[in-house]
Length: 279
Image (cartoon, rainbow, N blue to C red):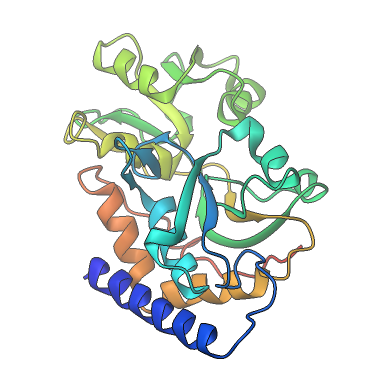
């Protein structure tokens, strides 16, 4: 169903481009206008279920939203150039005109707004816990007293634990969440913590499916936005595309497809979001 929709969007985009070419000069090649030959989209390459490089084929919820938005802006999937966009480089890559849009679990914050623009949000995440599927002891952060918890070094998730539960939890920090999951498989830790949808993506991989579950008791709020260059005039069009994806059911379909097997249900009190940010 999703592939049919994307195919229809691609055909519509191609028709629009043909009509534009017949009409003469299409104007500037600004990103998002549908005039340029390609649109450069920044994603993560190493987050299963969100942005993942499968040997030149890209998958995940962020990827699905990016494809839909690009289609609404007039670009077929063949016109998307996927660019790896690590967290620490996102602002620089927008400021240096290396990407046109970023879909990479990119939380909207006032500090980031000083350098870049945002559309969205297209998802509202919350810090949560991943535990073994047979675990019945941990239902939220209040059950972590004396437990071994894992998060990523330097992450906001790890810092929140240090700020709020340092005296109660034994925090282990690893370079990646995948390594945290491996440690939990080995029995050395009791839970992994980061944003709920990231945890769901980890749990839904073929190697992990059925072994873990997301607790479903979030204790923070992170609005994932579409990073764009500051002052871009494409924000309203991007927001309209996100809202259309939500309204026609493709948004929820993408969530389910990319978290299948993770025993995960998105927080209905936060999602779907209302795209409104254009600062």
